Length: 268
Ligand code: ATP
Image 1 (cartoon, helix red, strand yellow):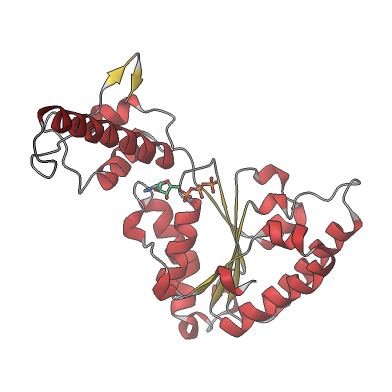
Image 2: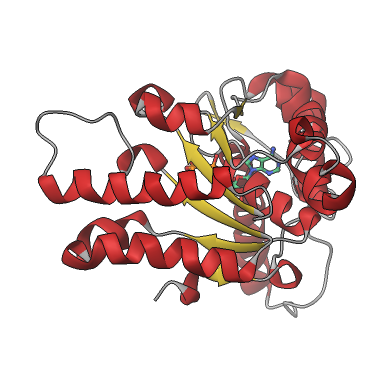
């Protein structure tokens, strides 16, 4: 069950070059997380240099947190357990405590290893009076296991959490995640870099002005930009197919350059 969410670094299909507009954050993440794992011997010379055992990526949806988590694992050569919180808290409810222990046992066997928890707040949110007893026990068990990692400097396992709602996280969890990175909505220049990356292999009309497109897309996440590009290219593709079908020309022939259009005040 857990192993079905396990990926080896060689099988991770994301690297830093798939992420645009976040050079500063990537640099910091490499220095804080990746290098201490890749050069464990060197970093073990001082207790103050060790890799953190908890890292939090926070920010709005679709801005690259999952991409970053995978790129860290690839770059650091770490195995990647994508922990499905739903499984931990629903399906295996009665068994969840055992499962929490099993996840850490597996991670230790596979080290260097990342335990990635997307939407970590849904699992490790602030403890409240309405917490089900079993939920509280899973959290306690999880934290116990995590503390075990912290006290053993030879174990190379990292809990990497992602959340859109850091304010909902238990303070005790935040303390265990000393390295925290905000991955925000991209600014103009970052959107330009993301668009350039998404469109680098596309056949665009020469008239397309990516700078202008970046300016027009304030508030778009990386994921929104990808969707926008997908829609615009599909729109042109459908138009191309319609023209071919109408004229009876062979479908495989002809250039399909495409463009972005502003229709009814919305970008298409
Ligand atoms: P969620 O909070 O919803 O899980 P997320 O922050 O983890 O979102 P990702 O899943 O990493 O977001 O990104 C979604 C998609 O958006 C990516 O697969 C990628 O296509 C695109 N994307 C987002 N940010 C970037 C970026 N900085 N560079 C390139 N592509 C990006």
